[in-house]
Length: 111
Length: 111
Image (cartoon, rainbow over all chains, first blue to last red; front, side):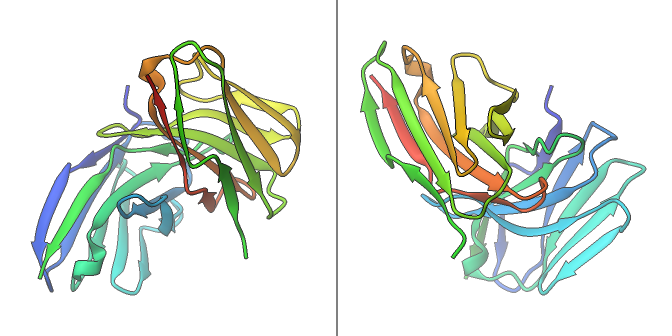
């Protein structure tokens, strides 16, 4: 059973638009939700993270919106740039530090 | 400069051969991980290590074993490699299970 689900699988937006990437999870004991991005032939790198005590976390053009009741979160990328084109992974961890990843959303920003 | 180093970066092995993937980190992190990444499946946790000789199975441990005899070093061993173990393997480390730093990966092909 997939503990962390992401949608859509792929997304294309125009430069300057807002990209919205969705994530949902099953385990209510998860207490840390990082997003990682990965460029082709590179390793994943931490982009932004949130804990359930907050329902929003901003870092520049990247914002996580978190809905604990529905076990859903989303990553909003405003003013999308071609350099944002990457695969984005939602992840979750709780007791035991096991970090569980979703299957990723491949984002393409068209100039 | 915080770093997770994986060796080798590329490896081709014949089915049935033993495989040793090595990982080192220079951040004195207690927690280390081995993931594999396959297209469409995201990153799947093979093993997690909480410190020297304190290892725990992840989600897909079958066919793998690990060794951690020094805090800064974590090895993944495939005894009698199979073709379905062809993948990209990432080692990672973290302090207290929060920001997880990934190595550059090892691309293993089993023929």
